[in-house]
Image (cartoon, rainbow, N blue to C red; front, side, top):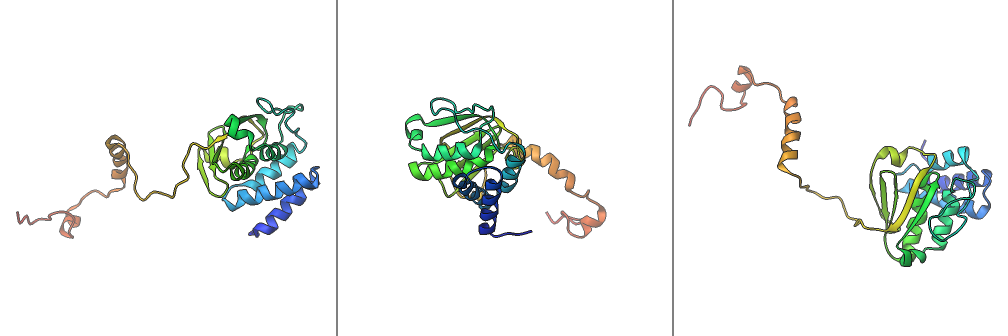
Length: 211
């Protein structure tokens, strides 16, 4: 089924509220899911899993050092709101680490809004994923499974000033001759073997050589 972004935001907001969050955090959850969906990411599933498994993870218990929760699992929504509220700290500290944050994908929109605040791209890193955003655009590196499969938690999630340029897709690519040749060994398996009939129909010089 297809839904408008307004419908998705409203539905996510109500779901977060029904999952036990106050309206303020629920509003942010709705906006976060909308942002993710608008960038082709599985934000709705991440929120649904979070609410189903760990709806009441704790917020950061202290802002100094690595953010952790007194309950063991760190909530991506309350941690995200805190990150956005403390965005200026990223100018001084350059990065903020979070431990055992559930559904780390949900942190990415809050990093995007923090990037707008400090006017510098931010990169969110967990497992094999690196998501860099300037608030509007997004560049993703890493495993699609780590990115789109709802996770219980990431042992470490780090938000740092972005080190990957947000660029348009390239029209050409460069790699070594060794890589090209290796690909060619597989490509050759798709070629049909030459026959006398194919030669007569124009594949190669045929039976007459004019040289």
